[in-house]
Image (cartoon, rainbow, N blue to C red; front, side, top):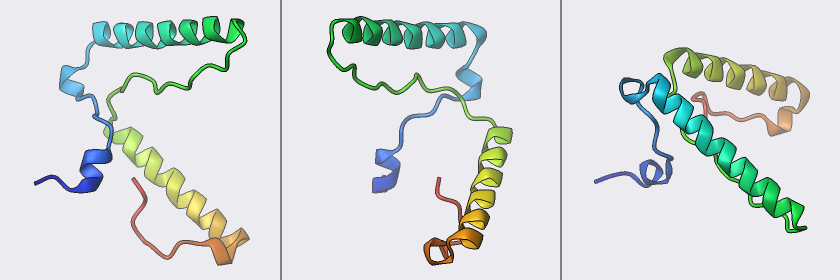
Length: 92
């Protein structure tokens, strides 16, 4: 049985399934969505926000994100000690 947080997560693209063609198609899909939003905005209607097409997450991306989270928590702890989190694991 899947945990509820696993059900809420967005699907991720695997590196094995990712290629230059898939990257270009993902870019095209995102650009078309932006064009649709621009067309909608030109008519005076506020456009909807869209989530970009999922891209694969590499190990270096995960390391950089963890480092950013640690630096952020450290800064928050120094500047706003009453808002500092006590958890040791980064929120993913």
